[in-house]
Image (cartoon, rainbow, N blue to C red; front, side, top):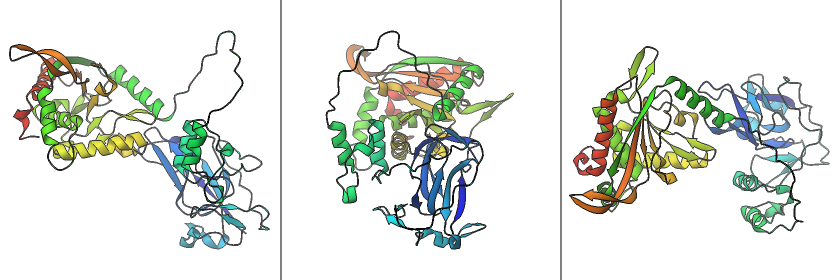
Length: 426
């Protein structure tokens, strides 16, 4: 007889106490391998896939999509062959399929489902759990022939019911092309009746990352006496320098990397801005953990480049590019989203010129960069069309006065206008 093992939500680190279920990656009745990801959850800092340490038949799932699950609460129960498990957990041989329990093999290794009518011994029922668990449905949901998380994601984003999509792959497997064809296919429906009366408001709860952002920005606004100064700068020479650098072999240098390198040199001259307030003291950080705003799958996030002061422009560009792609894919780890000491915010990518952002608590400063766009400008005594950007600098007035903040911003603007003076540092 199999032994039923309960797998609970582990401590995901960074002081997190729970996570929200984003999507289930296994079905009740499915056979899983050791360390196979069973659920995708959103913590307060990132979206992660959670692997299960047991291999066997999934007998129950706990938690609906959108539900908050505390650390230590049950996620799944797994029926493990009695000879493959000890009191200390699964033995290495638990990675092998549970032979003799009537499993039907799918195309994906390590993922099998109990074959109906296989004549196998019944799986032991799930054990009672804490009240926070959501009991599984009386009957296991129908299996959809999809093994690709990407296919499931595309269908979910377009509101497509995969059960209604015919699969053209082996054994009826639903492929990405099947989903794309179903999305492109016109849907014939009767004209909907126009509702009468006042539409009801939609109440959207703040959960996961969105709730954490709201709490952090509220705290920043409440605790930090911030001020903002700004200046327009002629970025024509900076853009020309970037073009020259990118003509050489090697990684391409982004505008963000050049601005980041300028900020790092500026923080060497104004180290009080790379700090944070702790009670009645100011902690001045020796290393620059450079955060930058990036648009992720679930909103704005701030990845952090570790020890950025040690990186040259090319390495900065590579690391900024890597973290940006991870933000878009939603694969940033909690460690890559915490611990920043200074933030660079390029809101010019949204087509805007200026902003007065809230500081990323507990940091003391943030440089904002608007779009770089052609504007009339007096250059060498003559009116000309130049590439102009607006730079804004928000700072914690407790760590410095306006002279320090203005000095840093003026230094950055001068480097943007005359980047040649920084060639040694770049």
